[in-house]
Image 1: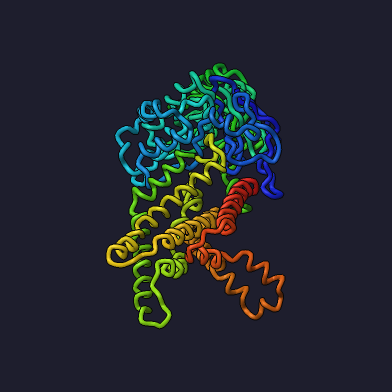
Image 2: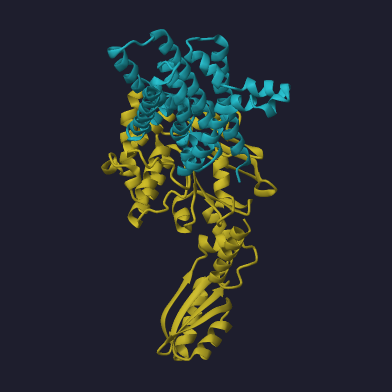
Length: 336
Length: 243
């Protein structure tokens, strides 16, 4: 088990990480989410013992990272944001060096290197110079390095960046497989990935923890608004009236003209999902409006994420919020 | 520690790096010997290998930083510092591993340079005792320079800048005794004494004259230790203030 207690990091006067605490249980994948500049990489660097913390404590399998670094780091595999590879080394040579660093006994070295190369499917490039590899391969070589020696605890900072969709799926499967005998903390920008892979998520923004929970709980607690999409052919005003006035509909958030008399409506509903849908369908058909599609969206992790990060409510359109977040991130970058 | 040493040595010898550096060293050696041979017809001049070594340490200033410039600067540039720091090794082991690797290349260069005395011995006379002392002195001199160069490399991220700053510092180390002997400094005997205490060149001169004095060995070894300890402090300090 890995415990993180009151972890704080100051860069000069800037507080990058503010008093965060959470634990990673055995055989658990913990997702680590946050917009750019939220303090994700700083936190991971501190957990890995690369950056000293300004305050707080990290315990990996019973050893304090700052007091017994060598002991704690034996149980740790770390894949940083930029894979830490030497461009002038060959893949196998590099892994052999890392195996030495991780104090893998000579007798086991070769089989261990073959094992991780097989897991990451990099055997075919083992004699190539790392500088000649594509980004995806470099990423996987870095990942292989983290798995050497089979450490109990893995820190993966955006492990799927730079991989093609096929490889992304493979690496996700691998991470899920690794869960059997590892604890994993895993950061990503891709929310669907986090919801597909992680058991629990920690959401941080500007150095503060915004939420620590399972994905299901977060979805449930994020408010009961469900998004309804209706595409019709016929009178726009008439349809808008019907949808707006149906019981259970909170408001219409968007109307798009699709040409040829087709219109798409997006609305928020807070009543019973099926009842509202049926009621709308009946009324529309009764007034001679044709329905080409109707469906609802559950609040997914993305909207939960947006709501939690940007507590200014979910009333405006989702995309607007997403834009705001990236604008904020850009602003923050400029400030830095 | 051994794995770091091995990796560093491989990075020197699996690439042309060590060989080119050694070739350059041989070239400088030839250059200096050629110069010394040219001086043969001067009165009072006697061609000896210690004299050659004495001359070569000037050119050596330009060679050592090339050897040491990448030591830590490249780790940072590649982002591999993270790998070393998050592995179960401590910073002292990293520094010593890298230092020994640099020293190995230096020994390789020294070994190559024995070609000249051997060749000379085959055709003339070489005072072996004196030659040996000169080699010992040269080794300590290089050991000190490599520690200094490695220290400079820990300060910066760009290896070229590390080389240039390293050259400057080695230049100062080489000429600090001449500087302390200038009339200006001679006005302040305390300052002169202080500066002269750091002078490495006169200590090297003893070696090249055939003396191995404990105080000189202690001087060079402590210079190495101070530089390596400082190296440790620089790396730790940067981790603490990184931002």
